[in-house]
Amino acid sequence: MSSHLHHFRVWRGDDTKGELVDYPVEVNEGEVVLDVIHRLQATEAGDLAVRWNCKAGKCGSCSAEINGRPRLMCMTRMNTFDDEEIVTVTPLRSFPVIRDLVTDVSFNYTKAREIPSFTPPEGVAPGEYRMAQVDVERSQEFRKCIECYLCQNTCHVVRDHEENKEAFAGPRYLMRMAELDMHPLDAHGNRAVEAQEEHGLGFCNITKCCTEVCPEHIKITDNALIPLKERAVDRKYDPLVWLGDKIFRR
Ligand code: SF4
Ligand code: F3S
Ligand code: FES
Image 1 (tube, rainbow, N blue to C red):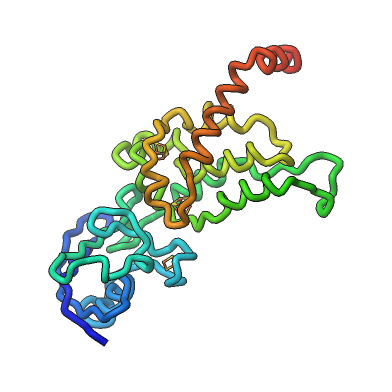
Image 2: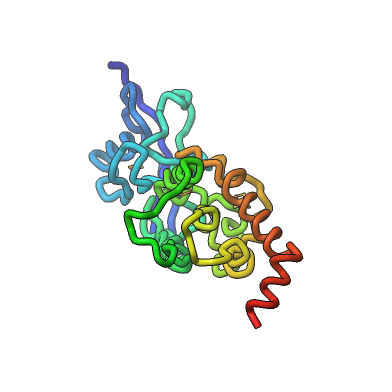
């Protein structure tokens, strides 16, 4: 097995201060960035903080920025870098740093809690729900989400605008609203208009950066956000829906 010494540059610090620290570190054939971070912990940087769990791209814990690109450390192969290329690993930029590569992602849990859960239809018992296969498949794409928050971290609406965080749920949770809005059995009501009026769907100008970084290759923009925008507009400006709202909300 071949190995070489690779130049790593890792952000070290906490919520008060930090800096990039250079480490020469051994890399073996077949390794991923997370392997190298673990080797650093075992050798030169025993107190390096890093969050991870599955090392298989499924838990969503090891998100970081590698050479400025938001990625999963366990799914980034070392053979995608030249041997001379410095590999810089920094924490997710949109969330507050706790220590080193570990950030406080509680923003996302707050947003998750703001979305009303699936509301079952009245008079249908669990076990009696029936859906067309096409609707099942549509949901399944969205449910591949591993909650790595790379999309939430990348979207420019919050990445450089901390002040937008309160009003904007972010692509992961707007996608959740789209999933429920398209769900034939969800009885909650008008989630598309709620997404527009209460969860900041209008901030999204479909730049698709969220889709580009999603490790599950979910078409967040094309299959969730754009359809959700269209559904919000249809509902809000459809004259029949408008009339119905006027009559039934009186
Ligand atoms: Fe991660 Fe993709 Fe889920 Fe966003 S939608 S949290 S990028 S898996
Ligand atoms: Fe942001 Fe994705 Fe929209 S990156 S602007 S949520 S398409
Ligand atoms: Fe689980 Fe990387 S360690 S996704």
